[in-house]
Amino acid sequence: MGGSGSKAKGVWPFSGSGAGGDSASDGNEQSVARLKGSRNATPFVFTRRSSLYYDEDGDLAHEFYEETVVTKNGRKKSKLKRIHKNLIPQGTVKLDHPCIHVDFPVVLCEV
Image 1 (tube, rainbow, N blue to C red):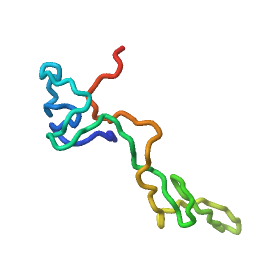
Image 2 (image 1 turned 180 degrees about the horizontal axis):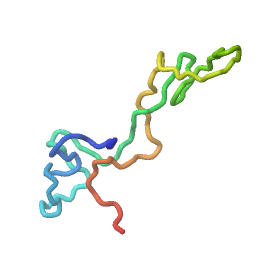
Image 3 (image 1 turned 180 degrees about the vertical axis):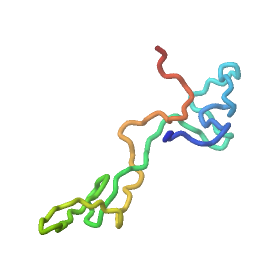
Image 4 (image 1 turned 120 degrees about the horizontal axis):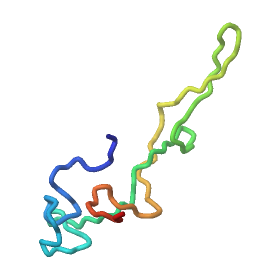
């Protein structure tokens, strides 16, 4: 339900075996494991995709609204209309503090 975890089955980028086996029994106690031997994987996330947008004027916000005046029965009423067009996503943003990846299979704290 709305999770941001990876959808790949059977491949864990943070474990050496790929099937979720016990790393202590394998004798593999590395802090950074290799994914299929091609590159190093780290449990930290340093960037994220931003949810902010730029409008035509260069303003940055989550949502943009335009005030419209509606005349009904001789009375003027102002309404806010949401703008969907001509918005440019901000893109990738560097995080101030690295976060741990959502698929990192380690218990950080036991209660």
